[in-house]
Length: 279
Ligand code: SF4
Image (cartoon, rainbow, N blue to C red; front, side, top):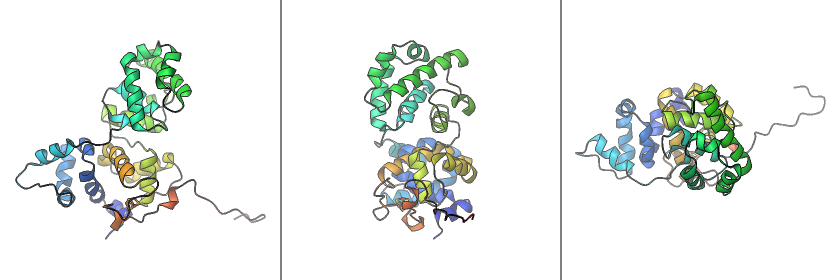
């Protein structure tokens, strides 16, 4: 069987994604009709393996029923309101999704527009978001961002990467999340799950999410960009976990994965150079 890297080089990435999608059906929302047409046949073995009866039922019926299943809620995709997506994603840094969703929902009960948040009492905002990490800096980020949206973007969230990363507290991952989850614009948000998993797959060999993003943009055909973050976060939370990946316990990629598990933990160590050795 070909390795994941070989599948990627020969343009067969659907074999990878098709074996994961039936396990995390919420991710189907990022697969458009054209893509579904192309990958449906590849999905059938994994659907059957999962016990899904596809006989006599239309594709839409099968997918529709699968998507009704409860899945883990991800902070960036709770709704498509660009302002809420932006603020939630800023708040989600180093915070569990369920906690971010809970706290941001309370925040939006009072401050659900840039104007309201920009004019809020910082102490009140800080108090609300206190249960999540880094609440002092996050209070400043979300209030400054709200002000900048009003002053420079007429109170709307921009849908261009360069404008998004100019906002306080918005880095490449947050900007790409907003593009994907709020605007449906293909982009690759690389968080710790995506970074860890594609390194374990041997698809990239990178020390940090920024370098992973750079390489993935070259390697991954654009049709997969909307899907990859959502699917790999779900896969990373349940199967390819940071600690104790389920390689021998039901991971469908085990036969083609090089399982480079240790390589992604911490920065790559380089050999100490011997004194006087210039090589
Ligand atoms: S769980 Fe193991 S086999 Fe599966 S993708 Fe992760 S490292 Fe590879």
